[in-house]
Amino acid sequence: MNTNQELDVTALAAEKPSLTGQLSYYYRVRFRDNGQEITVNAELASLNRGDLTMVLTDHGLEPAMVYSRLLNMVKQPEPRPAVLSIQRLANEEERQQFQLLLSQETEAFLFCKEQVEELKLIMHLVRVERFFNGSKIIFYFTAENRVDFRQLVKELVQEYHTRIEMRQIGVRHETQMLGGIGICGRQLCCSSFLQKFDSVSIKMAKTQDLPLNPAKISGACNRLLCCLTYEYENYRDTKKHMPRMGRSFQLHGEEVLVVQQHPLSGAVTVTTTQGERKMVPQQEWEQVHQLAQTGTRSKSKEKNEGEAEPAKLRPGKVAKKKTEGEEQ
Image (cartoon, rainbow, N blue to C red; front, side):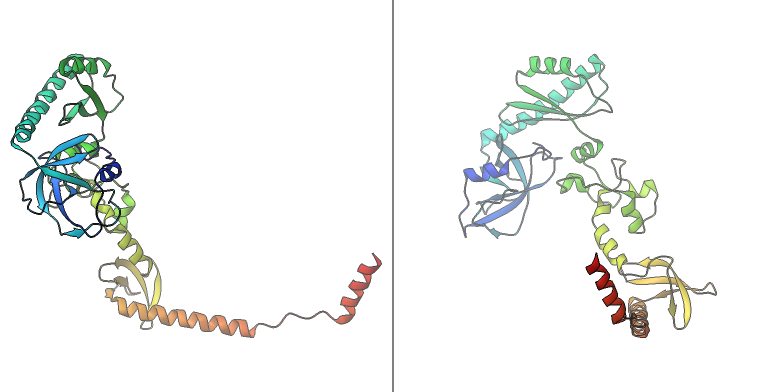
C-alpha cells in the first residue's frame, strides 16, 4: 500500500472508538520494504521491530511491518483523524499470503512493462501495488504527456480479472517511491517521513545564503531540495530584525556599510570607508540601532514643538462668512 493514497482514517477511527484515559501505543510501520514509514496506534504493548501486523485501511486490512516504537500517549476523547490503527498480529496464513502478494506485484510489473513495449507507449512504469484482498491493482507511471492506455488496461484486466488503476505521478513522487540517499548522507526525506510536498523556490536558497549551484541545491529528483523549506522561515524572520544588506550606519563615529548577514550568530559583516572588513556582534549593532532610534525620536519631538501654531481666523471674518451664508 502506498502512503500517497488519501486514506479516510476518520471513518476508520469511528469504527473503533477510543476510550478516554485508555493507554495507546504508537508505532512506525511500512506497508512495503521500500515504502514510507507512517505512524499507527495500537493497544498492543508487546510489538517489536520486524513484527508483521494487520492495519485497518479504507479498503480493509493490510499487512505492515513494524520498524520502531514511539513514546506512549494517552488517547483523547475524540479519535485522532491522522492515525491508522493496528488490529492484531498477522497469522501464519496471512504471512504466506503477504509473501505471495509481493511476488504477484513483481510479476504484474514485468507483464505491464512488456505490454507497454509492445503497444509502444511513451511512459515509464515505476511501481505496482496490489491490495491484500486482491480487489484492485494500481500501476504507477511517469510520462511527459498524456498517455492513451485504454488498450493497456484491457490487456491487464484480461490477465488479472480485477480492477485496474493507472495512476500518473510526478518525478517527486517517483523518487519518493523508489527511495535513495540524499547529498546529506541520510535517507531521502520524501521516502522516510514527508507526508506532502511543499512548494520550494530559489528565493529560499538565497535567503539562507546558499550557493546557487544546481548540483548543490537539487535533490535526487532534479528538483529543488525539499529541506530548503525547513529553516526558511527562521532565516527570513531573523533577517528582518537585522541591518539590511547595503545599509550604512555610524559605528564608533565611523560610517560602515553592511555587506553580509549571519542569522545564526546574529552578527553582520561591514566594510569601513577605508575598505576594511570586520564583523560586528549582534549586541553591538543593536546598541547602535537603539541609539539611532532614540536620536530620531528626539529630533522629531523638537521639530513638532518648534512648529508655529496655525493662525486663527479673526472673529470679523467668521461673522462675515456666516452673514453671507444666512443671506443666501
